[in-house]
Image 1: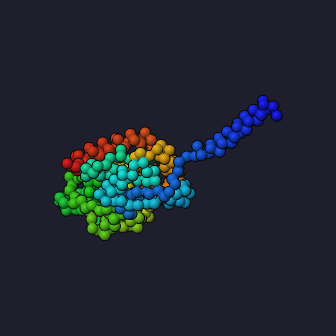
Image 2: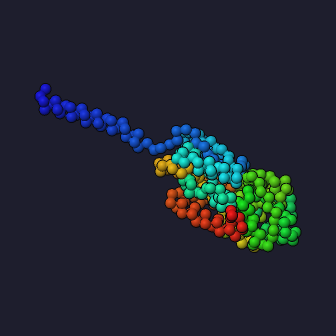
Image 3: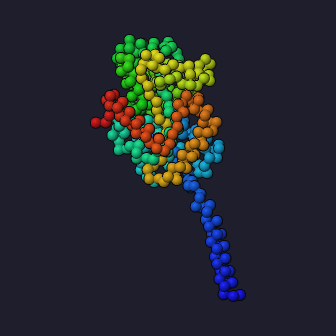
Length: 339
């Protein structure tokens, strides 16, 4: 073989080797990040409440539709009005195998307690929905609407009627103060660990009313144990399917219609620890988009009467900044800011 032929052979062999190596390496280079071990799904609230229910629904949907290879493990860390869960995630900087479901206690807990935590200590992933609040009473009471109930509270005198809610200086108590200022009433506010417990306490008549989220009291409403008086939103809920024998969520009037000019909706979002990569964040963004496309999720949204607003990326970050400022102003007016 001539020197030139030998050189051509060597070049051809080298090219073939390079091409084969490139083709073998390409799938690895293009493969998106995904979890390599079980993912801890932190719930900064008690069991049975809205956050817990949402986390466990997402867990079930992921398993049923085989949306990720590794399992999601739900862990409740409710201490300190959710501070336990948030500080746990804050301390897990750079760990892509931990996510947390958040409510508006993302804002209220640090503002009320001074705990060294801010939503910017985590990585925003996705707003899953916004949650409504409903004024509830026991179905055995004579109150058929919010106007008659609040008139009775006012007639009873200051601190005679009990309003049950989740946590202290959190969403439920902030909303209760809003009701008091709008109507001239004054409740005894009784805090519980989670919305599930709040609903049970109202069924047992240990409190006179609650401002629980729809999903936290829907079972008792369906069973005829509780009565929904009004929803704290600008518009009635759009859902028309009957939940009880006679009522759909859309039949519940707004509190404004009852003369209570107080509105409030709550975040249901997903975050990761700070210091994770864009590829790791994108995995969960895409995972949660798939969750929201499932029939189970859509059914959950309707039965729980959620506002189905969702967002991620810069839009979500901007929303968080605005919402934080709104909560600061609300809590300042209620005297709930940490001194």
